[in-house]
Length: 397
Ligand SMILES: [Zn+2]
Image (cartoon, rainbow, N blue to C red):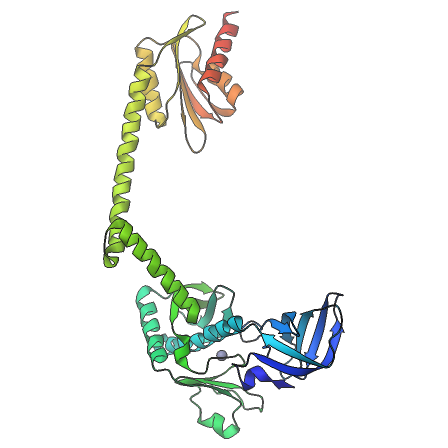
């Protein structure tokens, strides 16, 4: 069969005869054609999708090199005779941009730090290449150098040749690692170097347009470099520019000062948060000092929520209120982990009062006769008041 994707990677449609069509599960057929434009996937590049006679091709694969390409088609009746095939060109062109971009990036990597590229992965959103190297990561400086190296290859708009060389041609190619010759050995001569590769590529380096490094990480003993190439990279760059411009306009600063401005605003916000927390504490303390004392079971009681107070400040406030004549003080401050509650008492048993509250709201804690503290699962002033009133009433009986 003719692999038209190797003959002309830019061919989007074709007509061919059905060689075999077998039902898979009542809804899908496995179709083999005489010729196909559908790349079956390989070398990290996903397979093509598209249509055969208008029916969706959902998967394409090739079990062995030089074997037939199988198209998995959404169809309930077998296809016969000649069919018209169309590949999803946007998907294929994107894959060609990622794949050719990876070749340029791999060349730059080999030149910059001698890393040997092991494998490519192209996903719907991300792409990465695994590189054999001891390097832990690619920092901003090295990333900028690699990107500039690729930029130069893109700007030079060098031809990309993908072909099956003769033994003599193979010997003359700038291969870093020469593979053993065989008639089906496919070579991609992309810019300054040639490598064995089965994928589909652009016909010139200029069409890669842009390669942007997104980050790196160690993976299975190798360095994994995440990148965007082609229109993906340009879309990302435009998104970043639009966001940066909007942010700079919002902050009334130049694009070049954006990062500095963000740092300054972060520091200012932290200082304001601290000031606000301190004001809230002062306000809460002032409110507690003016809190109305109730008389429960003959005891002067202060029961209040005191948002924003730390446990130590709750203790200090409770002691102050006791000194001012209260017999029972219960203060509660809601936080992330629960409600911190302190009970201070002069007369009633503070530990027992806390246990009564824990029985009502859930939570744990405890303490002495004059002071108890813990974490409750909830707190409501009216409920706490009713609970302590009942508890004092029970004690009186
Ligand atoms: Zn390739």
